[in-house]
Length: 183
Image 1 (cartoon, rainbow, N blue to C red):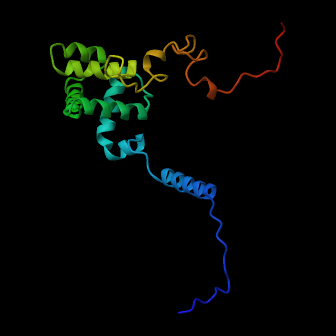
Image 2 (image 1 turned 120 degrees about the vertical axis):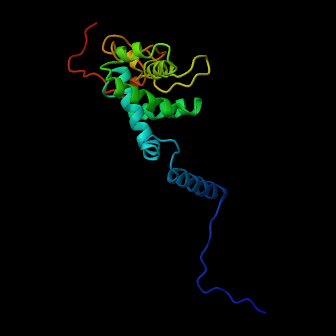
Image 3 (image 1 turned 180 degrees about the horizontal axis):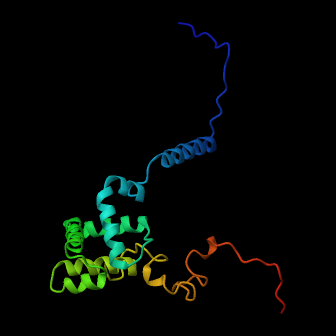
């Protein structure tokens, strides 16, 4: 059988560089198209009531009204990974607050003396204030710049870091240079 010539030949130029560039573009497109697992929105969507209950308890326990939802979601996941019954303990704490009508965390803490829920309350407070839920050098940090222990003095004290202007200092708008300093 005789091969007929193609009347409209299209030249294909596929060098190693072009193949590498196309492969990189395909991998990048695939990576961008995937959803990052464990994002705050995904956690809230999958466990709306649990996150809401935890955030309400955290607001009561810390006394802070504007807690970060992403940090709260991460803390909740970490606490649940440590103890499978953590959500039940959160529900029990919320029920105790409603039943006894505690007005603040100090009254709740006093009412929980000797109760196993006392340790859970202190874990939640420590998580928000320190930004970690466990000690040691391998502890995972859930909040550093937004840890509550730094918020009260944030306007006068730099958060401890090796970056001299504080963490993430490079994202802030630089100061105006209206008047040049004199040396």
